[in-house]
Amino acid sequence: MIDLPRGLGRLDLRVAGGLLGLDLVLLAIGIGYGVAVALDPSVHWPPALRFDHDWGLAEMLNYVKWLVAAGALFLAWLREGALLAAAMAATLLVAVADDAGRLHEQGSIALALATGLLERHGTIAFQMCELVIWAGLGLLCAVPLWIGWRRAEAGLRRRALGTGLFFAGIALCAMGMDTLHTLVGFYWPDRPLLSGAFMIAEGGGENLFLSLLTAQAVGSFGRAWPSAPEPARP
Image 1 (cartoon, one colour):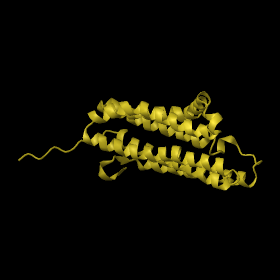
Image 2 (tube, helix red, strand yellow; image 1 turned 30 degrees about the vertical axis):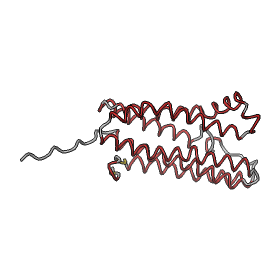
Image 3 (cartoon, helix red, strand yellow; image 1 turned 120 degrees about the vertical axis):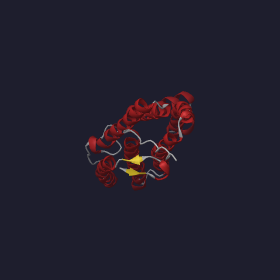
Image 4 (cartoon, rainbow, N blue to C red; image 1 turned 90 degrees about the vertical axis):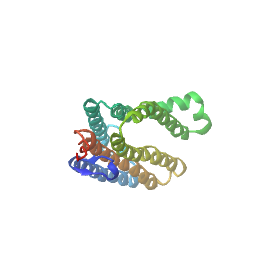
């Protein structure tokens, strides 16, 4: 266990080491897949080992991470009765539902077709609508998070901020890198290596940040947090 600076919680080193090790192995396999496809698009690769496959090993490991982190926060809510911990757990459950159920992909298709954006802008409309769906999911989670934040004590807020920083890293990769990956594929379809590099940055970064988030959630919320020592009496 290691304490993060500025009271941002604790990192469970066993969880972090195990998950990051698995991430690096799966990342190496994913890079091998990307290079193989770039050199020969007809190459066969088992779906379970594909880095961009929704039910591949890397993605299924991510589903487990989301659930473990949400479970740690749920335990904190039961133990401390803090609404913020419950709201954070619910947010992570929304994230895994979106990840496993492809909510933003399916929602973006429906939105692009319903609004006519697909006819006006082509397939890039799907990426535009994905950002809209993500924004909607974010607003859905923001209200209980804000209420919980206002009611939380300072120590809990600092721990929650630590989780939030890792979540922001995941969002940066999942939305920012994903958008760049799509734009590269749209405007430079003849550069598969460039597109593959963004795909690896997107998926690899998301996986690594999620491992750190899980380790921080387990270390900061999965166990009882030590209370501040009482001041010495004169």
